[in-house]
Amino acid sequence: MHAHIPQDRFMVGLIARSVTLLSLMLAASLVQAAEGDRFTDPEDGRFDASEHLLTHKGMLPVPIIVTEPAIGYGAGLAALYFDESIADASKKSLAETGRRAPPNISAFGGFKTENGTYGAFAAHLHTWDGDRYRYLGGVAKLGINLDYYGPFGQAQRYTVNGIGLVQQILARVADTPWLVGVRYAYFDSEMHFDRDRPLELVDQSFKQTLGAVGTLIDYDTRDNFLSPNAGSFVEGEGNFMRPAFGSTNSFDLYGVRGYHWQPLGHNLVLGLRADWQGAQGDVPFWAQPFVKLRGIPAARYQDRKVATGEVELRVGLDERWSVIGFGGAGKAYGRRSDFADAEDVKAWGAGFRYLVARQLGLQVGLDIARGPTDTAFYIQVGSAWR
Image 1 (cartoon, rainbow, N blue to C red):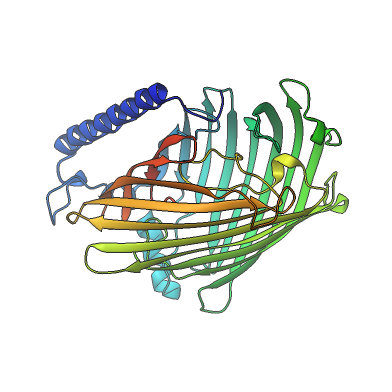
Image 2: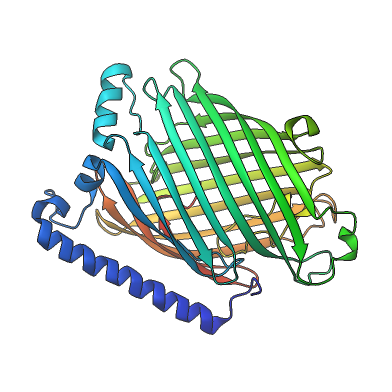
């Protein structure tokens, strides 16, 4: 499958996802009727999953729906395990430190898409001392099928197979919004093209291991990490691949991204996003940064450096429903062209949100986005910016 989604397939997929959402809403209505007040918000009488999510402990199945145009439609299932409920974890951390902390969560699952891309994973999130320390660890087996476009824009299918792991820990700086941390990541990979390898990639190895030690600095003042209405999140990171860390090649990946949400009134929230990523050294072509925007296939526009900006406006229709409009632009540059000569890649779109858990501030919805060659849609749980 090429990254472009033909219009008839897009419409079929959109109708299918709309039917899925309508089916979920109907199921929710039936659950609401069966469970009574458990799924009814006492403030407005509408469907609300706050009590269920806040008090849930143990295993929680979560469907995975993939709509990324670069790999095609797909589905999967994840199982999340909560060692205590969100409400209990928050109450305990507030009493101990005055900060809200999430419960410890374990997850495992898998997915597959129509172009053969698949993944299986297991992960664990753990916090200590009222969210003063955050640990994230995971392992995954991946088989990713993508298109390489090269200097002439001709798509050539390639596959990256591998197994990897990540270990990361963050520590809060005193009682500030700043967190600093370290990360170790490892990926044992094998790459091949469906047809002959492009001439400009003849020096690329088929089999590579990536072993990286990284540093992170976060600044987080979001009022809600699920669906923010105010505040900022900024992250800077550097990842350094060296043979001493288990890497075949020596290269660096680094970048900074920032999001800000600004209320403009009772029913308006303006979102701003800026993202810059870079690479240097003997980096595999498939590990280079790429433009990340809704409506643009992953890895479609790649180079040694990438700069992206995006704006989003959310308009509340009432206390539950809202509509959004968004647009952004990006450039991939550094090796094939400098910043001024690089192609301007633009995408825009619209969507809607429903406040499905008022006490958590969690919104869900659907976005439709149009890029230079693709129209894509995305089921969103929380913010589209992560």
